[in-house]
Image 1: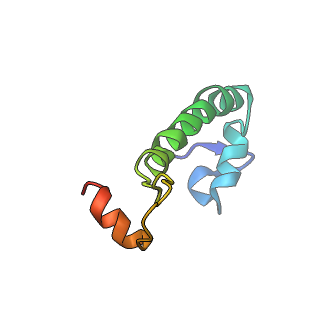
Image 2 (image 1 turned 30 degrees about the vertical axis):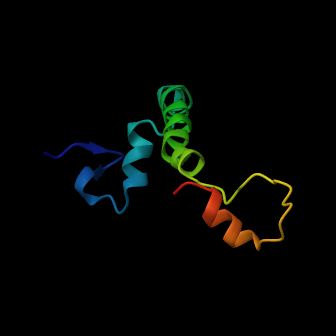
Length: 83
């Protein structure tokens, strides 16, 4: 298993980048794969992951009703809002 290029055996490479330069580096195929496949996947995956933030949030909201009798709002909510 002594594949050599420029007098250096593959097992003698210090870093992965050295091997990547021999193989071809960042070429057309890698760009097409990144921009054509991975970017759309990560875009839709992030939408799917963050969607519970929008559909599970329950705002603290109640409709404004004119109160003819002066009752405190928390007491009025307990009487009129179903649990």
